[in-house]
Image (cartoon, rainbow, N blue to C red; front, side, top):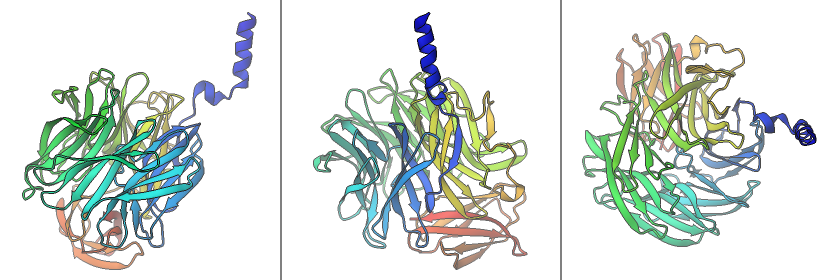
Length: 513
């Protein structure tokens, strides 16, 4: 009885958050620019973030790291810039940072001068966000580093693309570093057919590394028809190639949303997305892959409205698969644009639940989730961004859910409003158009898609980050039409859609790279 009394007395002295877990929350972090959380880690009861941001007035991309407490309150933030371009390379997959007992490591792209070729960078900071060093790596073409992990206690491993836009020279790029940023080995793989895009990687329990990447069937035809292969590469800890497997063929998709994780039985799970031409989406796909690279099983999500994107996959301690991303969704007849999408699935492929989250506390009318992990208290902590397309405001989004994926107790399937009053977004902020691909290259053609039966926009104006008028185009009352993008420097631009009377209907943010 004394032992029981002692235990109960001890529990009364513990914070309730340690007994019952942290309460769910939804936070717009306002870190100072066009913001998006690309990676998240938890250490010593704080959340560590890697953030893509372009602060005013120049809107030049900088790399930002930040930390919050377990309630989402910002503790510190740190920026790294060269006054031109230093940025996260991949905003999906939760792969842009690694953490050990004393340091933070980040990867991304760095460009030394406007219009110049990019190199990959490796940045080391202490746990307070103070920069220790930044080193760049690459050749004469565009070289990009996308993901970083600890290969072991003394070795970092990164992956990316080498020789981008150099015909016949593009390769999957892997480098191993010591903790001081010295190269231990560097390897190049694949690339025999032209265009290569490395997407995600995972360090396996046995020390091997798998990388999921895209490869064109030919460099000249890349971009039309069934022209890409989805492939897996497996290497050992010294970088020796063990096998390469083709796991899918598909239409061009400009969205970098393939992911790979290892399951408890040693199989691999790959998320997969494709289009069916003309920008029309298919629902995402999950593939179960044997340790030798053979496709064993496929799961096709139901086609939800305009489709969903899986941006990250991870496993929980209970063995469930959690996927996060965004969904273009309806509730009844109301269209809500992009909202955060979360699902849970067993490792055998049975869907436990899926939920969508919409935060309109401050007029936000879009939400995207890019990354997530299981928090130490058993809940889910997720990162991405919120956007108000009317006020031209984009801010980092940190969303905490309980272990059942709920924001409110006993939540149900479908769309969940995370503001206190649980009211729908005002009609004026509901998106009626979307554009893709986004980001897009300067001089390319943007596709504008109407999400309503009766499109009202008659004109489209291009504005730069300062609000200066760049170009204007007349629009047809078509559900899908092209809008040319000027040959402008990389950066943030805005496409303002207007009625014939001149009243603004919607403003869309477009990243030109």
